Amino acid sequence: MKTKFSTSQLVILGLMTAILLLMAYTPLGYLNIGPLAVTFNVIPVAVAAITLGPAGGAIVGSVFGLTSFLQCIGVGGTSAMGAVLFGINPVFAFIQRFIPRMLDGLLLGYIFRGVRKSLNTSVACFVTGFFSAFLNTLFFMTLLVVLFGNTEYMQNLMGGKNVIAFCCGFVGVNAVCEMISSTVITGAVGLALYKAHFVPVTATRTKTIA
Image (cartoon, rainbow, N blue to C red; front, side):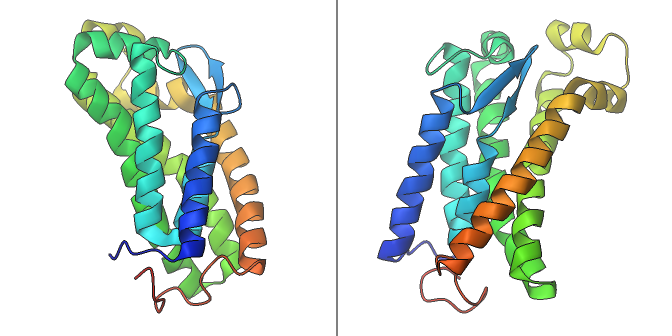
C-alpha cells in the first residue's frame, strides 16, 4: 500500500480531515443517546477511503480515533462511557477508541475497490458508506467486550445478558441510525466526487494510490 498522494488528493485529505475535526468538536458529529452516541464522523472517513484508498482512509480514520479518545479526558466534548473506561485503564481506553476507527478507514479502502471491480462505482460508494458504520460499531463493541468485559462497570451494563444480546440491545438504535445516514450521505458524496473526477478512474492502476 503506497502512501504517496497527488496534489488534488492532498487537498481532499486535508478537507476530509478538517470536516472530521469540525464535526468532532461541534454538535454536528455526535448525537448523544445514553452512554453511547450516534456518530456521523464515519462519513468523512468513508469518503477519504473512496477517494484516496486504504491509506487515506486509515489516516482520516486515525484522526477520528484520536478525537474519540480525547473525549475520554474532556477534550472537544465528553464521552460518559469513555471517561469511565479511561479511569479503569487509560491504555485500553486508547486502544478501544483508536484502533476501530483506524482499522475501519483502512478496510473501507479495500472494500470500495473490491465492490467496484465486481459491480460498479455507484454501488461501491453506497456499500462503502454502509460498512463504514457497520465496521466501526463491530470493532468498537468487540474491543469494548474484550478489553473491559470483566470489569464491574461492564458487568453492570450487561446485567447478566450474554455478549451477543447485550451488544445488539446496547447499540441497536444508534447503529441503525449510523448505517442509514452513512450509507445515504457517503453514497451521494462519493458519486458527486466521482463525477467531478476526484475518484480514480481505475481502482488498481493509479500513479498515487496502489
